[in-house]
Image (cartoon, rainbow, N blue to C red; front, top):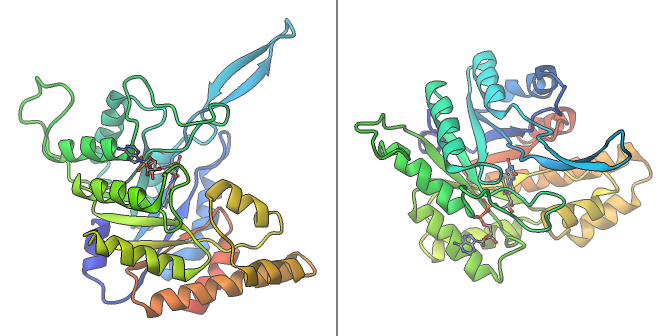
Length: 317
Ligand code: FAD
């Protein structure tokens, strides 16, 4: 079933989880160990992230270093199929522009269609570590809107090869990312919102937000979206902040602002257990307020930490 149908058919706030593929060499057990304890909360769908290749430097026998591209977390499509098979819920693969030619993208979409996976979160992807800024493949997409366009084309039976006549029409429901605190590359919020609106106009049907720790940021974002005619469901993305180093790493990586009270409480916590308690309490409070406001779904970034997410969801549902 499509993600947007779940929203349309529910009177209550739904719940969904996001997992990331294990590092290459790992097993599906890591995914199942994360999800098994969470399935009792009956998520209608589970997102699986996609990871672009990155560069590593390998030392050769000559003593020189060779720059090599490797995908550290492959397996998104396979994991989606395994999740659907094991739990009987829908899986939502993230698809990115980075590292993909249009042809690669088409082939992945064909795989997904054949596997009866008909939800996709369409993203640009981040820059590779050593690139400094996002670099598209020569025959690839530069922005998520172009990826949305390609998926929409396939939903209309249009493939890259114009000789294909009467190509099967896929039936993907397309989600996109949204940024309550602005995407860090956008010159200003107005432009960022205009680009989000363009993605919706191009065929995207719902938005999942970047994590945020102050609900007012989400509510203001929704208001601004509605004001410019974005009328699709906007799903808040939530992550508990439970570790000291995250005080710096989350703002640096995700470009989010941390409320003073959360920073104060986390800094005052005496040990790891107290820090987890602070993060869990904060996220419970956020979740309850968002649920009371009638958001379509609470989307939790699990990052492999099912125990913490379980505590939060148990308190909210
Ligand atoms: P875009 O919509 O393409 O926007 C990128 C930037 O370009 C923005 O600043 C935007 O304002 C600007 N822009 C958009 N269109 C245009 C245009 N036509 N002209 C000029 N500027 C434009 N990353 C991964 O690698 N894998 C994942 O699985 C993944 N999952 C994510 C899930 C969620 C819910 C979120 C919020 C993010 C996720 N990301 C993931 C991170 C995401 O890929 C990055 O934030 C990336 O930098 C931007 O992706 P986007 O789809 O928002 O890009």
